Every structure is written in C-alpha cells, then in structure tokens.
Length: 448
Ligand SMILES: [Zn+2]
Image (cartoon, rainbow, N blue to C red; front, side, top):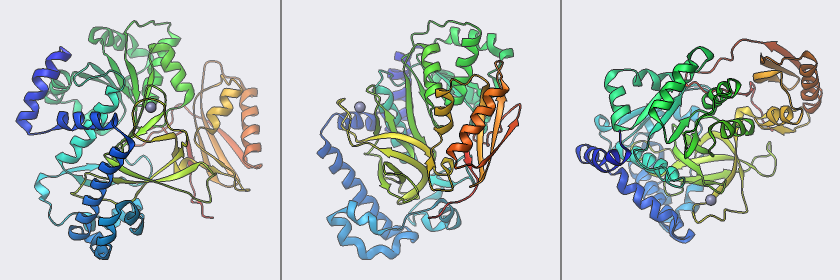
C-alpha cells in the first residue's frame, strides 16, 4: 500500500469516521517542540493545573486534597509535591478510588501491563489519552523523517498483542490501514529465516519497530548467515525493553541505519524519544516527570515519578513506574526544545546491590563482557538471590569456552564484594507474558 495514499486518504477518513484528532495533536506537538523552553513549560504547567484541580474535585483518592486548591492555581509544579507518591501495589489495591466520578465507563478502554515485573497493572483510559500517546509517537518518528503511514515491519514479543493481530480482520487492518506487518519474535529462528527474508524483501519496510531482543535476534541470524540487505531503512525503533550497546552495534551494522530508542510504558504512554543527536527528549506536553534522589543510588541516578497529563478517566499522580534514569545537565544542541534525560538505566529491581552498598545497573554485565570480548555467551540472565548469592544463567554460543566463563564468574564475584556466583547452562531464558527479556533480576527488596 502506498504511504502517500494512507497518509492523505485513509488516515483522514479514519479520523472522520472515528472522530479522532491524532494528526491535529501531532501538528500541535510538532510546533511546540520547536518553540521555546518557556512556551513548553507554560503549556505543561497549564495542563498540570487542570489535571490537579480536576483530581481534587472528582477523583476519590485525591478529594482529601481540596485544601491545596489555591496552591495549585498559583504554582501546580510546587503543589504536586504535596500529593503522595503512588506505588503500583497501592494503586492495584485501591483501584476504584482512582476512577473519576464523572467517567462514563462504557466509553473507556481497559488496558493492562504485561506484568514482566510482578503483578500486572490494570487501568482505564479513554480515546483522548490514547490519541496523545499516538501523537507523541508520530512526533518522535517525525524527528527521523518517518511519517504517518510509512511501511513498518514490527518484530514483537507480547503474546496478547500477537494473538490479537492473528485474526483476519486485524491482519487486514494492520496491512492496509496501518501499512504494517508483524513477525513474532518466537518465529525468528534459523528454520524460518528464508521465509522471513522473503517477506521483508517483498514488503520493503521504511522502518522497523521492535523489541530490542527481537530485532537483535534477527540481526544476529542475518549476520551469521551472511545475508546482506539493501533496504534503505530510516531507522530501527526499539521499545519496551532496555537497549544495550552491543545490541545497538549489531543492529546498526546489519540494517545499515540508526537505532532509535523509544522510551514508553504501557501505563504511562510515550515518555521520551531519542533525537538524531542521540539525546533522549521527554515528551513533556504529555507527561510530567519528577526525578527523585534516593540514598541507595549513586549521585546521578534518580527514581522516576510520572504523571500522565491527559488521563482524566483514571488519573495517577506521581506514579512510580519502577524505572531508574540518569539525569542530564548538559541538554541537547538540536533544535528540539523538550528537556532531556541522559540514560534509562533500567528497572529498580534490575539494580544489583553489594554488601558494602555499591550499586550496578542492568548494563553492568554487558559492559564486563564487552571489555573482556566474551564470545561464549549467546544470552544470559543474572539473578541476585541475596547479598551473598547470585546465579548466572547462560545460553552457550557456538564459540563456548569454559575458561572464559570462569573468568566472568570470578570478576562478578569480585565486583559483588565476594558473593558466591553459580552458573547454570540453559537452552532458553523464560520471558514473562509480556515477552520482555530481563537480563538482571534482583529478588529481594532493599532498604537503607
Ligand atoms: Zn536533541
């Protein structure tokens, strides 16, 4: 299907039919992102003020904060600090309290996270919320010259999403309305490689949208088999999992295009997007972020609190997503005026902790393996059971060498203040129902 046709005929028709305003929001965000920092901040403040005022009037969980009304009207970014931080477990437990009293539930969409880390979270949103998410994604893509309706190859791993996309109606919608084909990461293997290559060559995608582990798996197989593509891709957009440097390098080499990091969460929408200068810009007209210092983390790392500015159906203020990010004081010299984050370090329970209080994020082992030029490991998962006990699960590569593994175990043990590290050789590493691959898991809570 022709991208021009989709962009200019089908998409506008769909908008009319459904009454949605994604393109209008996208154009608005596009203008705003190239305006000044002051304009962006004042838009965000206004949205935050409206949301907080709405919450204290209509949302049971926040009605007790009516006394903050004046403060909110004066300075919402100061007033929000008076509201409690919302932990996922408290939200799940008190689900009904977060539903707006003015909501018509029949017009809402029930969404849920995949639960790759703990219990899945259910929440309501409406079409308006989703449209802001979509508009933010199109904005991020537009920074790379990718437009609405451009041909997209999606490499996906979420079982729920794939199941939905397998029925015929969805397949037609995917192919002809969204100009997209989906390949499940479970189908990416040596046996199916020829068929996958044929599919990709026939479809000629303009960009790839994928879980990093899925597109890495494909890149690895293509590289091993010496397959050379001439696709002229605008980029490979990775989402849903942390993107590791070794993945970025191989994906870039095989697909001959930049790897673009999209930072989103099912329960918070598109949070940030990487720009062509390599910095990660926060979608601040959509989301209000707070970066909280904690003693257990080093100077530059912060726990992230997110407030989705456009979900009035089920607002969650200062919602703790469980992600840790590094702040960036330098900013970006591109012309996008949205603020920047330096790096997304991973989830809170992916940080390893040693007996003496040192912290390592989920990039820790990848960095070691890179420095040592390790070739023995195809995939790994490092599990910290306690301060003194870890297990390294390994899928062996063709170039397996036991000495190399011993060296890695010794080095991990040294870094972890002498903790015992066992090795376990496995054929596969289990992913949760969301299909996300987790490289590091800490099984216990820390408090300091
Ligand atoms: Zn930038």
